[in-house]
Image (cartoon, rainbow, N blue to C red; front, top):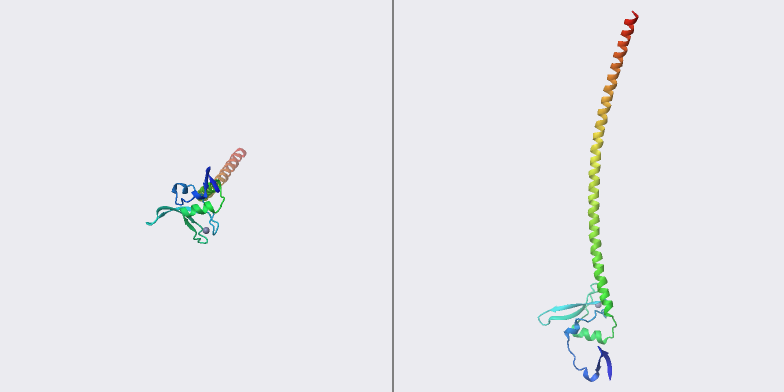
Length: 178
Ligand SMILES: [Zn+2]
């Protein structure tokens, strides 16, 4: 009786006695949703003395602190037998999208920081301009005062000149008449 055909190989019931971990195939196991909470599991490598460098798959749901995890061989049979249809493309696509999202988030953060810096620079420039303008206004005020003062002087000067000229004219007329 042929139950399953994988990679073109027919596996019969009688020949399926060799059950054991096959690390080379574990590398390509799809990351499926956790059966307890639905969050996609992730692959980890055990560093314990009893299971050095052994792969295991664990739910990463921090929100519910989900405790689901499986050793590589358990996970393999789970994925294989539970009839979970997760196209590997979807997982790859998801991973790519996640990476893109991360990049975009980083970029956005950088840009926000950049904008913040720009805003700070702009406000500093504006402050400097305001100071400069104030200084210039003061300078202009002083200049205006000086100008008004010199104008007054000139007026006074002109008045004196006019008086002198008028006096001279009167003198000339007086001399001509008498
Ligand atoms: Zn979970």
